[in-house]
Length: 130
Image (cartoon, rainbow, N blue to C red; front, side, top):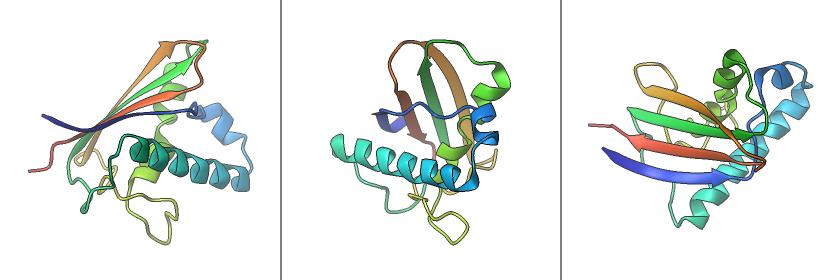
């Protein structure tokens, strides 16, 4: 069990209801900001992007907010983060290449809510690649 990184980004991941009401340009801007925040959080911890994406990983996300969101909103808020962690390609211009894919056989995702006034998201990425 090797944890690749444990980072904190100063952004609350947008919930599903918020994402559905966003204009497509605002949504792409939000993904670019998220990618930038993840990259800066890794740099602050003196961690670098892996040379090869992890083929099997566990992603744990702790979203801080004052009110507990309903279950489907909480689960869906990691979609943008999973997209950002995948490799860069023409359909994913914000990819960082940390994980190979977000398919269930490659990535296990756990999302939890933490009651807090802090505007932040805690992210743990564990590499289970053979």
